[in-house]
Image 1: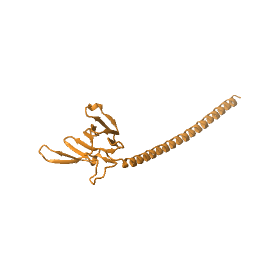
Image 2: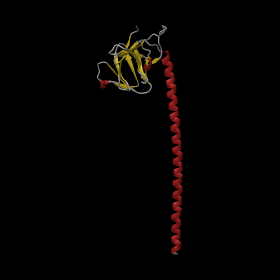
Image 3: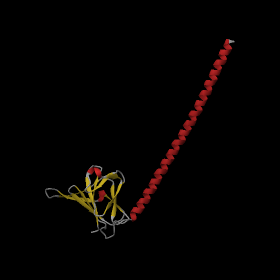
Image 4: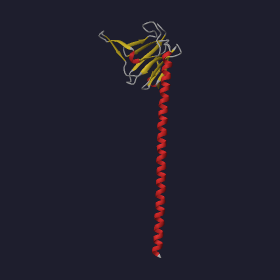
Length: 188
């Protein structure tokens, strides 16, 4: 009789262990299925977000292409200076945007020798706006810091875009920590 009781107890323990294992496997499969669904949904959400950003970028580029520059731009970098005219060489009004690295800088060394260069690899563009008394400075890649003349180096505003106003001198701190000045003036 004792062996029968022991056998029943062992059978009950084994049955209970089997039920617990079966339940644990079922819960594990359900969790894995839920995790797969969550990962799939997150991937779809990310694809939708990227597609929406791309549509917005294309729309902004179309709007930017129709905007006309209302101001000329003067830039200084150290002892060098450069400029961007609101009028193209053929007499048409400039539209859209001009990357900073397409503006030639001119300078003169202390020995009197002239030199030219481009401020490269900054990803910064000067863009026309709908307001003829402002321009937009925008970076696609890295944020930059901009401040008005008269403010201390630590009082600038960081970001990927900034509006510059007519006849106000601004300083832009580039990614390389060099500083350029930029001023939008009336058309020459």
